[in-house]
Length: 164
Image 1 (tube, rainbow, N blue to C red):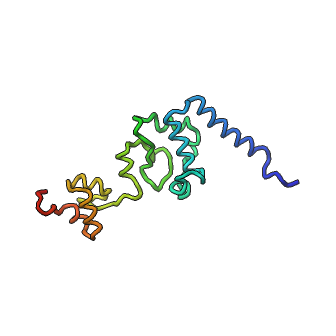
Image 2 (tube, one colour):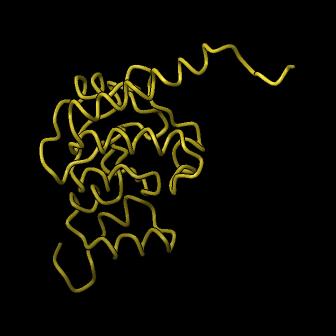
Image 3 (cartoon, rainbow, N blue to C red):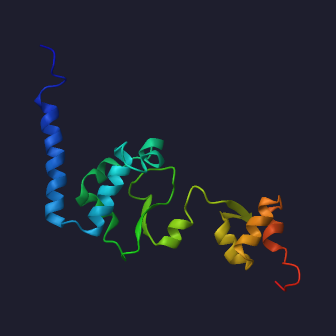
């Protein structure tokens, strides 16, 4: 009658994917790595997920290999510490081997799209790293940049009345 959109192949394929995911959950349990993996898939695939717009909505995808938890765990290995989470080194690329690492909160914070990138001593880096090197207070340097100072002046000019 024309109501079917595919043969039974599509249903079998969907059931196979569900069973593979369910088997991984049974085999590995809901380990921290499993939760990271399933959340990674959700934020890239599910338009109803709270942060979908920042991931799947802007084209970030999970490589085909990592659609199976076993391969994700094989490539990433166990999480080094409970504070570590998955990090894409290049925020414009997807979740794939070679672009993902386990990172601590400090590393994560330095790899945000919203970070301000400055030129300091001939190197492009995030403002937080440049401030660490310069020894000046973060808010002082940020205010200087917001007032239109050059990167170099904002990071090298001593604060009045203080020795650098």
